[in-house]
Length: 137
View 1 (spheres, rainbow, N blue to C red):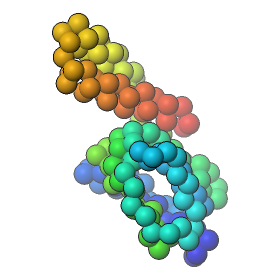
View 2 (cartoon, one colour; view 1 turned 90 degrees about the vertical axis):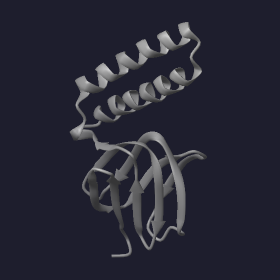
View 3 (cartoon, one colour; view 1 turned 180 degrees about the horizontal axis):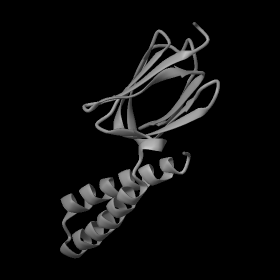
View 4 (cartoon, rainbow, N blue to C red; view 1 turned 30 degrees about the vertical axis):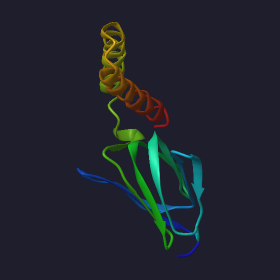
């Protein structure tokens, strides 16, 4: 089965995705990276973004919150702190998280708390990513 990739997305809570794909596109800290079958072995850090998995019958989008991607022998393994397929995202919860993060950003700016500002900015980015990915379902 050399013409396909096996794609696994794993979090501490377990397996999120396990299927074959024709191509996987993920955003690394250096930019977007497309993986086709027979790709050279590579390990790269991922940013908070969506991973696009193009299968022969459909496309799947997975919201990942950073992590690493390893490619070897036509297997793409993504290990992330958290990851959700578009169909599993609770949009109203993501919207509430976005609003909460926006409030925390404003409060951190008022207090000039740079650590809290960084945390709230990451939380906002995660919420926006989940909302964006949910729109693909």
